Length: 116
Length: 115
Image (cartoon, rainbow over all chains, first blue to last red; front, side):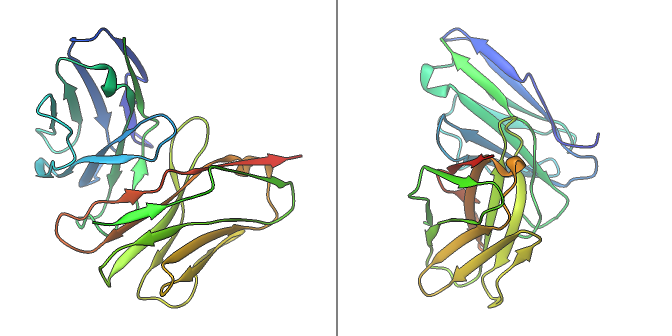
């Protein structure tokens, strides 16, 4: 597609439910990032993929968070047993560059998760 | 660890006027990149401008320019001839070229443009 596509755009979950958020990056983009953006805050890094390899997952807040990118394109961020503090916008970004340092990041519109 | 600070939560500018958004950062690294991202209400962030720390010349992109003061660790964004479409949240961000580097964002500033 022309840009980074995320789905669902909005998700309401009851506390304790599992959710899955999908990111479809720009075709051919090697690098993929997930960020969490709480209300009124800047995005916080969660994890980074280069192709199918998850090279950095140090930003994942707990073991309830899991991300995958099995074929090096579409990525899924899964949150198990959601808690209220998980409520945020989850942003996906992709980059053409092999290096995580130099490429311009292209962001999706985000998935807004609300946990009741 | 690196930090990015945007101390002004909101700013307002008259259409066609110039506004400057402030940002300071703190990193112990010598090689790093600085960015300004714009996030309109639709929430899709787009890159406004980037600056390589090793370059002394301030980056410029049309109406957008930066004032990069490396010694002071300051990286402000100047928007000239402000337009209604410039209204958005603006985030300053930084990362250094080291292992496990992460793009670190500031808290952002909401810019409104008065017609």
